[in-house]
Image (cartoon, rainbow over all chains, first blue to last red; front, side):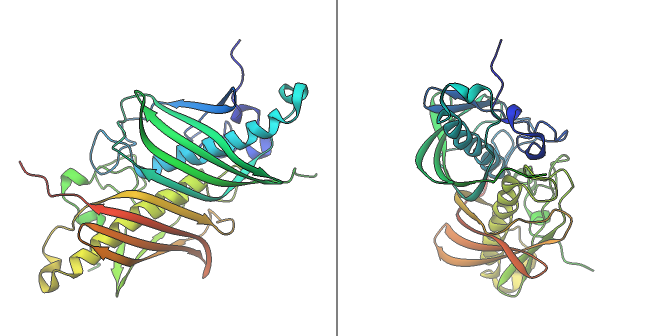
Length: 155
Length: 155
């Protein structure tokens, strides 16, 4: 059985994101999976996710993938700290304080985009994540996000 | 008669962007208008453009608005350099080399978001644009984009 993505384990009240919320019916449904000390997302864009020129992905779409995948990477890293019980608890939810994307080369829309996220720094509620977006092994974009862990909601 | 937006004047071959292309039927149709030495976009999100928590805008959506509006701001600035003929020629098309967004406070989705872009630096084909995103006069996000002018397409 395939493990659930980080986003599919977020508590319901945090699962409405246009980028990755399982409860957002019109959203992109970005899904990220822990893999060793990284977090990985593979996404094939729709043909309409192009930038100005057909065939290549829109910068805002690339930023969206990096935004959600960064949050999930931070969440997965925090989960890992919980040790053996990590599989049983809800992943903590992060929001971005800042997002930086470098567009290194045009990103095709008709291929699988592979995002790999890695924690660069973790201090209290703040986590800094670096992401690469590659196609066929070639890095097309790099991102860095500063994320803040949201406090759990109380009823 | 209201002036056309910068995006509605892009040449057809550059008008397919998911964020702002008039020829992308599924896109966001972001529109930017020159106003003195700035460029202004007013956009009301759809309810599904939320982040994890309902009611507040998704970071990737905010990045998308800033991405397209930055390109249009650079384009409008270049057009202004053309002097009196600026109204008759197609705006040059820019692509982002990098995009940085600082999310300062939650951005509501049920209000008009006002983006104001201003050129910080222009050197040859490279333009740096700063953008503020405000709601009811309060700045919710700031962006900075480094943009490169695309060469005109030859047949």
